[in-house]
Length: 319
Image (cartoon, rainbow, N blue to C red; front, side, top):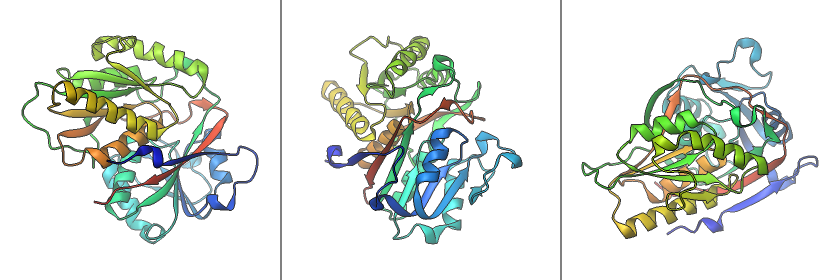
């Protein structure tokens, strides 16, 4: 059993130059105009730096960066990432890689990590930058109003069983109450358990998160104050998040074996990375999957400022 505590997390300086140990052959970032994404791109030292232009952000030609970027109209996360890999294959094999996960739409991030594993990438660094605050506080909208579909994320499809008598769904609940509701209603018969980001990125953000998660309580089937169905993990720590999922799964199985497990990350990108790491290490080839409520568009810029930058040293399992 993997010990997630062996993974290394460090804080990178906001103003000073980063140490030489924080230099890479390839640096990948999903393009977003926010200060926290742009500053990290500018500070990162790499032989080659690449922007990914994700189609759901709906950038016009005038919006695109002057630096090198990859663009593809496909909104299928597997098709997009595989095409990107094919074009830049020589930049990945046996080279050091850093991915700024901050601007990624979650399914693209998850499949990228899965694809790294499939292609033999064993180690990479991930960066996540925290904002000073969300522009519209608890009213911030990250995705389009309409959920177009709820489905399994490519690469995280499970071998589900017919027996649904004790299905469990673990939702990483963030600000997007409409996504939480859609995901919960998609598996309406499953027992819902929430992981909330605490400590949060900022003290006021936890209260904002609770206000939004409260809206989705009816769909989830329990109150956020229900200690039997609500757990916590730091909003900026993928490794503790993965450990929290393991603890929940073990506890539920000790009471009664889970028939099908559904994981649904709808909070910070750092926690979404934790969901992916847990699945790849512990849930492959089991009746478990990561599901996600997809929208056809996502907000380009929702935050102001940059408060902290984290680096996570990721090690992936073998296939």
